[in-house]
Image 1: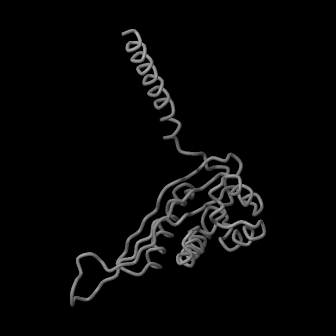
Image 2 (image 1 turned 180 degrees about the vertical axis):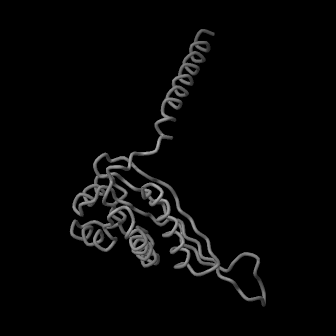
Image 3 (image 1 turned 30 degrees about the horizontal axis):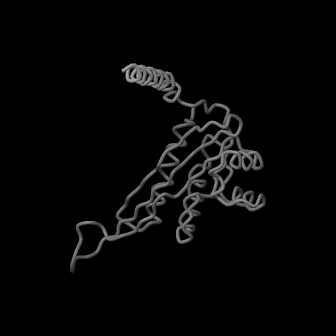
Length: 191
C-alpha cells in the first residue's frame, strides 16, 4: 500500500511542476518578438523535396521577393540567396537547420531570413462537379513559413500559409505569396 501512495504523490508532484512550467512559458510564447533591429530581410528559395514542385516553389519565393520590394525593409531577393546557397554547397532543404540559415543570412548581409517549405501542392477538379458538366479546377498550396533573426536566432514568425483557389496551382501560389507578404508587412508596419 505504501508504494501505491508514493507513486500517486510523485504523479501529483509531476503534474504540478508541468502545469507550473506551462503557465510560466505561456506569457513568453504569447509576446510578440522585437523586430525593430531588422532592416534587411533575405528571402530564401522555398524548399520542396518533390522535384515536380520545384518550379512552383521557385516562383513563390521570387514572387514574394517582388511583392516585398519597396516596403519598409530592404529585401535580399530569392535569386541572390539561391546563388549564396549554391556557393556554400547547400540546397533550400538544408535551411531547416538554424545554423545554416544564419550562415546564409550573414553571407548576404541580412538581419533576418525568411524560409518556406512547401507542404502541399494540389491541383484537381473542384468538388461537386461531375459528368458532362464543365470541370472546374481547384489549385491548393500550403507553405510553412519561418522568419529567423540572424543575431538572436529567435523565430520572428512561424506559421502555415494556405490558399485554395478555383484556378491553376500558380494562381494559388500567387495567393500564398500575397498572404505571406501581408504577414511580413504586419510584422514591420510603416510608421
